[in-house]
Length: 148
Image (cartoon, rainbow, N blue to C red; front, side, top):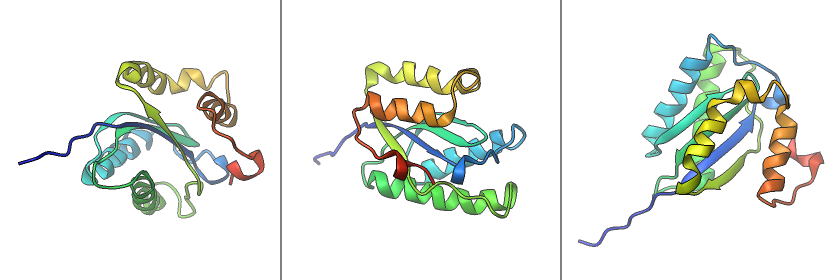
């Protein structure tokens, strides 16, 4: 029987609406575990995840049977519902997101980057970090429409 095989790594980044810091250190482990579960239910394997108070970095595989847009949409909708219960009734993710491809050879580098988010954000805010990703990946954008 022929097989269709794929292994595509994605570094997904998005923030809370208006970058409001809502995810506390106490909630973070449960929030991350919930994301891992959501991804798994969709056929995505989580390589690394770290949720900051105002944004998330999620390194995962793209399931062979769904689009990037559907993966992100499904985890954002489900996690928003759950986080409204766990965190605040007015919890929302921003509407947009960034997705960046990761090669197998850079997997450990990206994992380390995500694991060190707390230290990294002592020196740089989320918006600056995100703009750097967009620039590094040569993604054209209009700063007026990146944030909500």
